[in-house]
Length: 292
Length: 197
Figure (cartoon, helix red, strand yellow):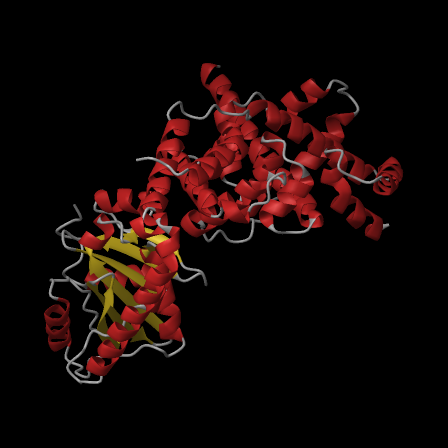
């Protein structure tokens, strides 16, 4: 009997909603005829559903929604048109020779570049691999990607010093713009580096706290403004209000972004929110300035 | 800027196929988030994402379900709250009460009123917002938007059996929340009466 009740419960919403097979219906009807508890529960679910449906109706979308969707689709189109209307594509018969020349030139340039990068002076040859995959890439996804690398132990630090002030100084010098990096004195220092993304320098810094990591990913605000690195509208709105934007990465880790006049910082971490917030708040540079 | 005919065709076919579902998506978003501005943003993001991946959509298949799945994924990425498992609610009160009045009241409107009082739409919407994400999503899609079980299963990437149990449990939690509101109103009324006396 208990088993039958269990089965009836599994079928109950389907019975309320006319979503059962013949066979399931005949079992369900037979069962509630003999079982008062399930019958009551079934009737209660029906009553709740009709009552609730009556109270919560469909809402009309705002008048400007359709228009703003169309506008954004046109922005999307513009990207494709820009990409497509390269003059060379208009002259099909010249396309293949032109492509041949292009490939040879790329080969020449790349080999020259590779030779050059053997020299120890080229510190910024390391391109962020993800950046080439899409026209624009979401900053939070980039940070998430970087964090997964950190977890796999694939983070290459360019800095050997463990003195916090030296580290900040080194990064500022390499990046060429001032970043109010969080300085977390309680944490172990894992490393930092400056890499290239769309011809701009982005900063990666990693701290470790027990088994948790804090990964700071910072890039110049100009990249976001030129839409080279994208931020969702919701994120931008939040940064505009000088607030922290919270998000979750693909593996459930926490992400938080905040902005300054000259750069945007995104922190990804497997710490919990209150701990992460405490660590970030103790850093004196966070919270002033504001993103514009 | 002039669109090439290829892109114009793609755009037209996208609008024809996808835009009719805007109201359904908006309702889904606003009931999930509870804020109209954020819901608008989520709908726009969903359309942009869908437009980028439109080539992966096979024309003639279920556009509403496809859009719903994109929106669900975006929602989870942006808004997911770590809600613990649904609090253990005491189901006995309402079931006992129902059993006791069941035989004396025949009209289902009367029964509803006895159980839930005359709550406002706002209160019912608030109760809905308190449901954990997965339950709320399922209840919105079926009870408000009229999606089928199969569509809901597709959107949530779960078997139909899971849709059934989420609806059943979701409505149970909802029922208790509505009952809770009704009782709190009832207590208020009783107190007022005492004050007057």
